[in-house]
Structures are given as C-alpha cells and as structure tokens.
Image (spheres, rainbow, N blue to C red):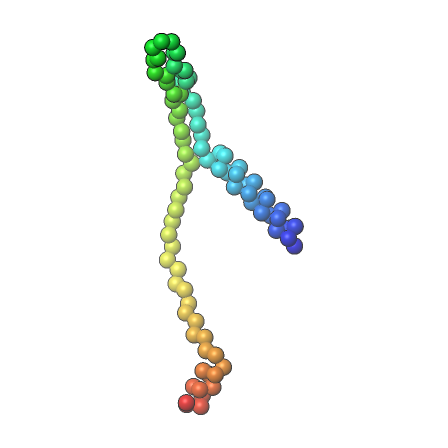
Length: 83
C-alpha cells in the first residue's frame, strides 16, 4: 500500500513540475553586455526579457453545509425519561 501511494505521489509531483515548467514563457529580447574593465569602468547592461505567465482563473461557490445534531446515549436517555 505504501509503495502504491509513493508511486502516485511521484506521478503527481512529476505532473505538477511539468505544468509549472510550461506555465512561464521567457524569451530573451536583448543580449547582455559585461562592463568594460579598464582604469575607468563603464556600466554593463543586463539582458532584457519578455515574460508571459499562464492564466489562472479562480471562482468562488457558496455551498450550504448541513448541520448535525449528535447526542450521546446518556443525553438521548435523559430526553426520553424527562430528566
């Protein structure tokens, strides 16, 4: 039983990692440049990137939950005898 749960957990983990890997699309739009290092240093430049995130839709639903009336055998007996 533990082996089956372990296999299922591993499969779920692989699926989650797969979905997260394709959730973000990064494309480099400009090359990076290292600073010139001489007596005087000019600033470098980080590469620019366009990042597109996947869409996540969240909804809310109102659910009516039933209430339970739980009584111990002693409480039921007290109600029937009138004590």
